[in-house]
Each structure stands twice: as C-alpha cells, then as structure tokens.
Length: 447
Image 1 (tube, rainbow, N blue to C red):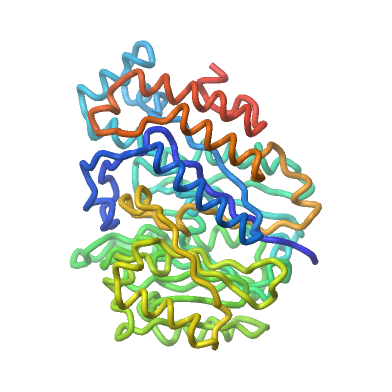
Image 2: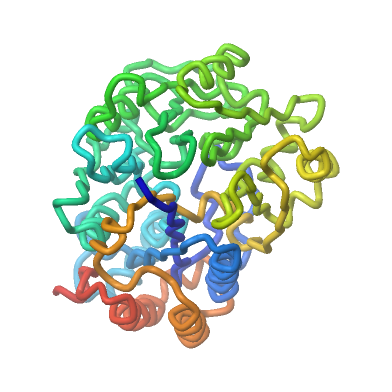
C-alpha cells in the first residue's frame, strides 16, 4: 500500500520558559532560571520544518496548548477573572504557576502513540494520546491533545483516536518518545517497539538516580487498543543506566526509521539480548546501527542528543536516509566523529548529515526528534484529515509572520504572573486556529 510518513511538529507556545520542571531531564534542570526567547524558539522550530520540507519530507504542524492553564488553576481553588487568577497564583505559589504555564506540548513526540493502518487489525490508523502522568506540567496536556487529534483525525472510516490511559503516577504513558516502528517501508506492515522503564506495580528501587516514566502495562494497553496482532509488537525495557544518565525517554538513546534502528549500546536493559530480539521479531531485513560505549560514552550521547536526531527517508531516493542533528553534537568530538563516520563508511543507509540550531528547545531538554510526531498515512487517509495542518511555503511564511507579531523575545519566571501574557497568548491562538482551519478548539474560544 502506498503511504508516506508525515512529521507533525509542535509549534512552540508563547509561554516557552526555562522552569526546570523535569527531574531526570539533565538539560532542563541545568537551564532553570535562564531567560527564554519564545520568538526565537518558535522560529527555530519553523526553520527545522522548512528544512524537512526541503528534503521532500511531508510536514505537518500541531498548534500550542493554551497557557497558563486557567481551568486547572480554578480547579485548584483560585477564583475571579482569568487575569486575577494568574496574578493570585503567582503570588501564592510561583512554582505551581510555572507548572501550569509550561509550553512543553511543543515536544509532540510525547503527544501520542500512533499505529499506521498497515499494522492494525481493522486497517485504520490508531492514535492514543499520552497520559504523561509522571509530571504535573505534562499531565495537563492529555485532554487538549485528545481534543486536537480528534479534530484533525475525525473521519471514523480511517482513524480511531482513543481516550488517554488512566493518569496514575506509575501508570505513565509517554507517547511516541518511548515507541519506535521498524518496517521495510512506511506503507508495509511492520513491528512496533514499545520501550518501558518499569512495571506500574513496581514498588520502586530507592537506590536509583531517576524514576522511569513509561510503564510496561501502559505500553501493553496501547498495543491492545491499537489491535496489534501476533508478531506486531515487541516490548523492551529501558536500560536503568540510561535513565539514570538522563535518558528520561527512549528517544534520547535510540531512533528508528524504516528498517533501520540507530541506538546506543546502553539503550536497553537486556543489552545484546534486546539487540538480538529486534531483528528476530522482524520478517524483513532489519538493520541495526549501534554506537558502543567506547565510541560514544553514554554521558556524551545524552548531553549532545546524538540519538534524538531525526532519521528520515528521502522521497525519490530509495535506501537513502538523512540524519538531522542538533548543533550540540558538534560540541562532542565523540558524537560528531561517530555521526560523520556513518556517512564516510558507506556501509549504512545514512548518507547525509544536516545540523539544525534548536538551542531554545535543547536548553529545555528537547532535540529534533522530540519536536515531531511521526504519522504514516495513505493517500486516502491524508485526504480525510481535517484542518489546514499540512505545511506549504505559503502557510509557513504566514506562521513565521504570526510568530514575529505575537511572541515576546524575552521571558522570565516572573513574567508568567503577568495577566497581559495570558491575553497576548489568547489573541495569538485565536488567530492561529483560524490560520489552521481548526475552528474554536481552545477553552477560551468556547467560553
């Protein structure tokens, strides 16, 4: 079946800031308190989208969530006008307001897990929004992500958007950041790899550095919901060593595209047994590219986000792949040498490296792969989508103009308590929902 992979990137929101809210995310904690530049962050993201389009890769976009999350603040006991609520929340608990103002939905790799119609029993695309139960500032994304995805993928003949899983602290589902897919090509049946950190019923290990976020039972539930039959799903455990090093999601140490898996030696708890299980689960020739610790130390892999790169197939060039890396890889001699060696060797499908400046995202712990949700669609499925969320040069230029007109170029934690920021964001999102043809999707538009 003819199909193509569309990369849906999250557009960075107007409240992008460095709150240091994610324990286990080394970059996020290190950047806590730094002044951010929301305008630059959004424009950097759009520049990456233009780069993907230039490679011939179809590019979609998902709009920001409304922040601060005034509805959640009301549920937490704040009352009055929306502006008064923001001011009162900042005065009472700046950390709470920071959690409810986070622009973390920009990392759409966490928005959902997606199974293409080639893999599912009913031949429809199945989407489960992530519950993101492990972190307060992420957990508030699940409801709007569900509404947004149902607005875009509304046709029941082609799509099923499930409810997100129950939001228990240890029943975490982190979406595509802990999910990969291997297939001969995007339209062929494949094997979906679910990477989990622990059981939801594990009492925990007090000696570990950071808590894993993905539960085995959550991964299994998503596979059941998506109707992945026998031989369609493989469950592997994240290496404890990787999690403790700051690989809070699997996509910090592994990325897959088509029949190729690019991963660090310490990506999986079972080590070599996992790397043997992957090709064994595939009925096609799967190719593994594994960086050994001696070549790229795990700490360097996490710091540089070498494996959080976008690995994409170039339309019209069968067997050729481009690896789009963050500029930060250049600061790691080991990571840079390994990446360059992939191309120089001529023995891997990766024959092109492209570097992108995503420093605003990287300072909060999100590289190129964090910013996109991969969705494989047939022509009929693509035609069944709602809204104007597939980019072309005209829409891209309009979005760049929109960002330049609406976004601040400097934001600190103290600015989150400014009611004017809330109103600025609402004006921007009201215009954006019209640009994207999505109607009144935001709570403030329906009030």
